[in-house]
Image (tube, rainbow, N blue to C red):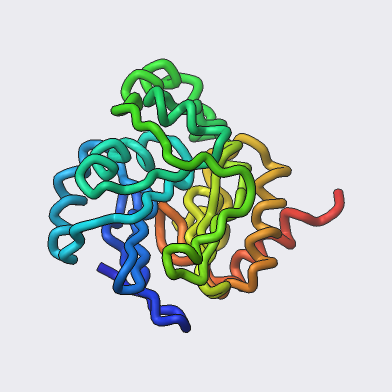
Length: 234
């Protein structure tokens, strides 16, 4: 499990990696889990949390309501007495276990969506979960002892959110991907204009690294370069 430390001595632990990254933010007293992975990863997620001796999760942050991020939210809430937070525009999806159909950005993903859309919507349904806090824009986490906050970063989905920690590390969900060395642009984007605005918002935080839910860490230099390239006047 990879671990990052911040200037406030918080630890960001990559609990799961691969298909969907799951992170734990801890200050030694409070624990925040970011996303939950797909349903089939539940046993592995439990084992990893047990290995870390996690008995309580104070807050579960869902970066958005897609199944590979939110499918185990009900279990986390029940087992760890976690408060669940999501953007208000996606609280209903979480409450019904439904998915937002992803919008594709390249020929391959466009083909996959066109051919398998119906199967995806059926396969991706998950156990519904009621949120405890449906946020709108910025949400401060100082009440849990963190110099951290959530911001609305739409583009992948309308309700995508990111977690900013010490203005050093950003956990960005699917607002960026870490799959390719030359770009952070996601293969599924609902709004191209919004996602670039969200990148600008994230760059304005002065964070040095941006950690996505799929792939590995993106350095600030790559995000700036990709943003500037895509934001050139036409």
